[in-house]
Length: 195
Image (spheres, rainbow, N blue to C red):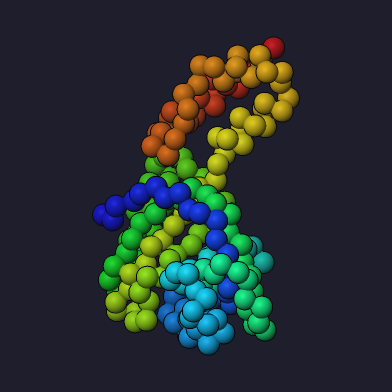
């Protein structure tokens, strides 16, 4: 089973092409199109594939494929995509493209086991992707910071002393926290909210 790690992703700007793909092999011609549009001397890293689950796209996956850049590339056919800093679960797959599903199985398996929510987007850093038989892809699952949002949301409706009363007995949850720990802390905080 591939090893899943936690990564703090810096914000990045991509010079990208947008497309809907049905199969991963369609990324190779997109890479060629991107390389023709974005000069190699402005790229600051390997290409990044941003996978967006959009309900209106029913036949494939909406993707942005881009090179990280310091400044936006202003050119017809190139979109500027900004990704905010975030925490991700990460797994690296080396081998045939057909084995990428095992890496995703490890990624989503850990997320499910720990109750980690990702409603943002997924991304892949394509370290090597010129041949479907020899790939090196880092798949990342963006972690939605729901615990922070939960604290902030409840905190907006309470005075400072009440915030400590509600969350005082809770552990600070982290990506290693179990699903039971997450549920228990949220349940305890909500019970302390009762009048």
